[in-house]
Length: 250
Image 1 (spheres, helix red, strand yellow):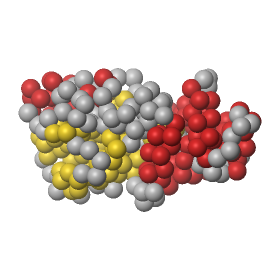
Image 2 (tube, helix red, strand yellow):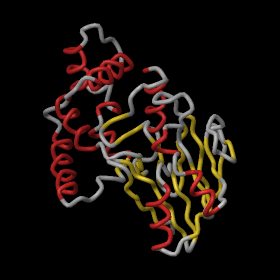
Image 3 (cartoon, one colour):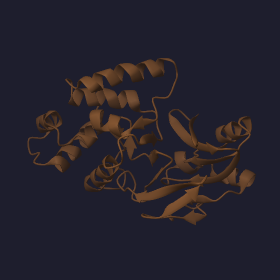
Image 4 (cartoon, one colour):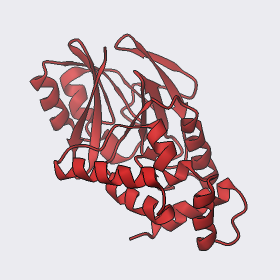
């Protein structure tokens, strides 16, 4: 069995650590020292690193980690400290498990996600009850990337890179104030944060029931989007309207 843990860094980032026996891999180590502490505390050897995209809070720990472990680093070819570039459709075998590589542009153009060990490691593309900002990609690209995630099995764990859940849920409730599943999620996730516990991982099933960006074909979401933009005609228009709305939501 592979154990999945979240190591908090910075204000709201997580490094995901997968452990099997005495070996581990890490996803998006933006800071090396908390990860090194976690590895030493659990007597783990770092066997590899997966990178989703080039933003500094996902890659800045790589030089220090390399000096300690000299491990392979898999990720987009555009990133300086990636030793093993990977791309859409490739499969990596790590910790005796296959990890499928997905190209999911939107937040950035080089963004990758990894599916393995029953989990989706999606960086800043999909968040709990939200999705990433469109820094480089288009609404069309991000919507297509999220739709790919929606086809994964419902039980797939969603391991994103930030603890943005409560803010995202507040926006989701503005979009769908009568969504009873969403109301229940707000209560349970707020209780976790009151105990300083992560709200993650989520699941594909939970996101399809409560994340407005995965519900762009639902009448309640379409209705709210049309109140913001009467020109909405299809699910992509709904997504683009929601993303723009969220950019200015306070």
